[in-house]
Length: 173
Image 1 (cartoon, rainbow, N blue to C red):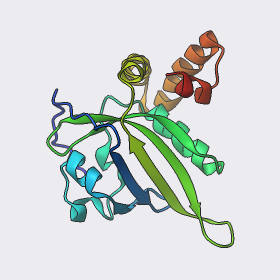
Image 2: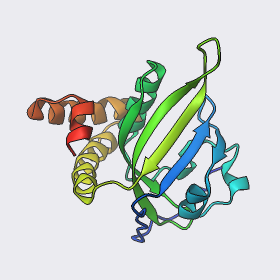
Image 3: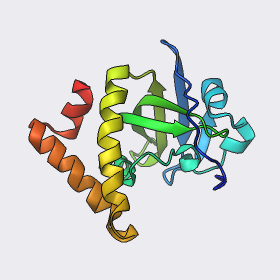
């Protein structure tokens, strides 16, 4: 279970070129497997991670709308790609370029999700940080029940101004 007593810090850990964080979850987001790289960057033990909700790694700088978009995309049976800021157990953080894909049983039913994360480009981190800060501010300016819609409205305005879909934006970063 995520401790609500973790204070975010300015300590950033950068994934090295060629390092990959890999995890799998149940359809509801409970972690079922992790690799050693995730254990190292997160600061949690394998035992602490396994069985926990994946949001144990969620950094408070991340807008809720990004995760809503991820789940919506995955629920539609599509892969999700995006830039994510995760928080370590000690309050530090690490940015990743994440690709999440559904895993299926032999009958085509979703049995979980596999996420592979790698080092993001620094220019992409800067662009995502700025967009996410704007989305988060919009989410925090409204009631909780309206937060996701407010964050998505900012994202849609940004995408519309760029003439891009979300996928095109991510690829262009």
